[in-house]
Length: 147
Image (cartoon, rainbow, N blue to C red; front, top):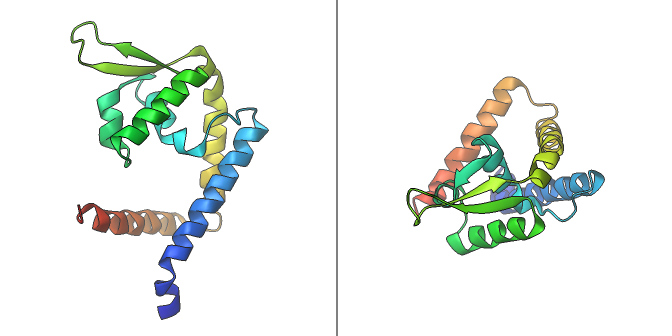
Protein backbone atom coordinates (compact mmCIF):
# COMPACT_ATOMS: atom_id res chain seq x y z
CA UNK A 1 0.00 0.00 0.00
CA UNK A 2 2.81 2.42 0.87
CA UNK A 3 4.30 2.07 -2.65
CA UNK A 4 0.90 2.89 -4.10
CA UNK A 5 0.65 6.01 -1.96
CA UNK A 6 4.15 7.06 -3.03
CA UNK A 7 3.09 6.65 -6.67
CA UNK A 8 0.28 9.23 -6.49
CA UNK A 9 2.02 11.45 -9.03
CA UNK A 10 2.28 8.57 -11.48
CA UNK A 11 -1.39 7.65 -11.02
CA UNK A 12 -2.45 11.26 -11.50
CA UNK A 13 -0.27 11.63 -14.59
CA UNK A 14 -1.50 8.36 -16.08
CA UNK A 15 -5.14 9.29 -15.50
CA UNK A 16 -4.64 12.74 -17.06
CA UNK A 17 -2.86 11.21 -20.08
CA UNK A 18 -5.60 8.60 -20.51
CA UNK A 19 -8.31 11.26 -20.31
CA UNK A 20 -6.48 13.48 -22.83
CA UNK A 21 -6.02 10.55 -25.22
CA UNK A 22 -9.70 9.60 -25.00
CA UNK A 23 -10.79 13.21 -25.55
CA UNK A 24 -8.42 13.71 -28.52
CA UNK A 25 -9.67 10.50 -30.14
CA UNK A 26 -13.30 11.49 -29.58
CA UNK A 27 -12.72 14.98 -30.98
CA UNK A 28 -11.12 13.47 -34.09
CA UNK A 29 -13.96 10.94 -34.39
CA UNK A 30 -16.54 13.74 -34.44
CA UNK A 31 -14.53 15.97 -36.79
CA UNK A 32 -13.37 18.56 -34.26
CA UNK A 33 -9.65 17.87 -34.02
CA UNK A 34 -9.04 21.63 -33.92
CA UNK A 35 -10.27 21.68 -30.30
CA UNK A 36 -7.78 20.75 -27.58
CA UNK A 37 -9.02 18.83 -24.53
CA UNK A 38 -7.93 21.76 -22.34
CA UNK A 39 -10.59 23.96 -23.99
CA UNK A 40 -13.32 21.70 -22.64
CA UNK A 41 -13.88 23.53 -19.36
CA UNK A 42 -14.41 26.85 -21.15
CA UNK A 43 -16.95 25.32 -23.53
CA UNK A 44 -18.61 23.45 -20.67
CA UNK A 45 -19.09 26.66 -18.68
CA UNK A 46 -20.32 28.64 -21.68
CA UNK A 47 -22.78 25.91 -22.67
CA UNK A 48 -24.06 25.56 -19.11
CA UNK A 49 -24.41 29.26 -18.35
CA UNK A 50 -26.99 29.93 -21.03
CA UNK A 51 -24.50 30.08 -23.90
CA UNK A 52 -22.92 33.32 -22.63
CA UNK A 53 -20.60 33.98 -19.70
CA UNK A 54 -18.60 36.87 -18.34
CA UNK A 55 -14.88 36.37 -18.99
CA UNK A 56 -14.14 37.31 -15.38
CA UNK A 57 -16.31 34.37 -14.31
CA UNK A 58 -14.16 32.01 -16.40
CA UNK A 59 -11.06 33.34 -14.62
CA UNK A 60 -12.72 32.67 -11.26
CA UNK A 61 -13.98 29.17 -12.05
CA UNK A 62 -11.14 27.60 -14.03
CA UNK A 63 -8.09 26.55 -12.09
CA UNK A 64 -5.55 28.02 -14.52
CA UNK A 65 -3.75 31.34 -14.64
CA UNK A 66 -5.38 34.30 -16.36
CA UNK A 67 -3.01 34.48 -19.39
CA UNK A 68 -3.59 30.78 -20.12
CA UNK A 69 -7.38 31.20 -20.01
CA UNK A 70 -7.15 34.32 -22.19
CA UNK A 71 -5.07 32.40 -24.72
CA UNK A 72 -7.60 29.54 -24.80
CA UNK A 73 -10.50 31.98 -25.23
CA UNK A 74 -8.68 33.75 -28.07
CA UNK A 75 -7.99 30.42 -29.76
CA UNK A 76 -11.65 29.40 -29.50
CA UNK A 77 -12.65 32.79 -30.95
CA UNK A 78 -10.15 32.38 -33.79
CA UNK A 79 -11.47 28.87 -34.50
CA UNK A 80 -15.04 30.23 -34.61
CA UNK A 81 -16.41 28.44 -31.53
CA UNK A 82 -16.81 31.57 -29.40
CA UNK A 83 -17.41 35.25 -29.92
CA UNK A 84 -16.41 38.08 -27.60
CA UNK A 85 -18.94 40.73 -26.63
CA UNK A 86 -18.56 43.91 -24.57
CA UNK A 87 -21.35 44.81 -22.16
CA UNK A 88 -23.58 47.66 -23.33
CA UNK A 89 -24.07 48.79 -19.73
CA UNK A 90 -20.41 48.68 -18.65
CA UNK A 91 -17.68 48.73 -21.30
CA UNK A 92 -15.22 47.23 -18.77
CA UNK A 93 -17.20 43.98 -18.72
CA UNK A 94 -16.62 41.40 -21.47
CA UNK A 95 -18.41 38.18 -22.27
CA UNK A 96 -17.85 35.19 -24.49
CA UNK A 97 -20.81 33.58 -26.15
CA UNK A 98 -21.54 30.64 -28.38
CA UNK A 99 -21.53 30.79 -32.16
CA UNK A 100 -23.34 28.72 -34.74
CA UNK A 101 -20.25 26.49 -34.95
CA UNK A 102 -20.14 25.84 -31.20
CA UNK A 103 -23.88 25.17 -31.05
CA UNK A 104 -23.47 22.62 -33.85
CA UNK A 105 -20.69 21.03 -31.75
CA UNK A 106 -22.71 21.03 -28.51
CA UNK A 107 -24.35 17.61 -29.03
CA UNK A 108 -20.95 16.06 -29.83
CA UNK A 109 -19.51 17.76 -26.75
CA UNK A 110 -22.20 16.11 -24.63
CA UNK A 111 -21.53 12.68 -26.21
CA UNK A 112 -17.81 13.08 -25.58
CA UNK A 113 -18.44 14.16 -21.96
CA UNK A 114 -20.76 11.21 -21.39
CA UNK A 115 -18.20 8.79 -22.82
CA UNK A 116 -15.50 10.28 -20.59
CA UNK A 117 -17.66 9.77 -17.50
CA UNK A 118 -18.71 6.28 -18.59
CA UNK A 119 -15.10 5.24 -19.21
CA UNK A 120 -13.69 6.86 -16.06
CA UNK A 121 -16.29 5.37 -13.75
CA UNK A 122 -16.68 1.97 -15.41
CA UNK A 123 -17.08 -0.61 -12.63
CA UNK A 124 -17.63 2.02 -9.91
CA UNK A 125 -20.68 1.84 -7.68
CA UNK A 126 -22.62 5.04 -7.09
CA UNK A 127 -21.07 5.26 -3.63
CA UNK A 128 -17.55 4.76 -5.03
CA UNK A 129 -18.09 7.56 -7.56
CA UNK A 130 -19.16 9.94 -4.81
CA UNK A 131 -16.22 8.90 -2.61
CA UNK A 132 -13.74 9.28 -5.48
CA UNK A 133 -14.96 12.82 -6.19
CA UNK A 134 -14.96 13.70 -2.49
CA UNK A 135 -11.37 12.52 -2.03
CA UNK A 136 -10.19 14.04 -5.31
CA UNK A 137 -11.62 17.43 -4.29
CA UNK A 138 -10.09 17.08 -0.83
CA UNK A 139 -6.63 16.41 -2.32
CA UNK A 140 -7.00 19.37 -4.72
CA UNK A 141 -8.03 21.64 -1.86
CA UNK A 142 -4.78 20.79 -0.08
CA UNK A 143 -2.93 22.53 -2.93
CA UNK A 144 -5.26 25.56 -2.90
CA UNK A 145 -4.13 26.21 0.65
CA UNK A 146 -0.46 26.42 -0.39
CA UNK A 147 -0.80 29.67 -2.31
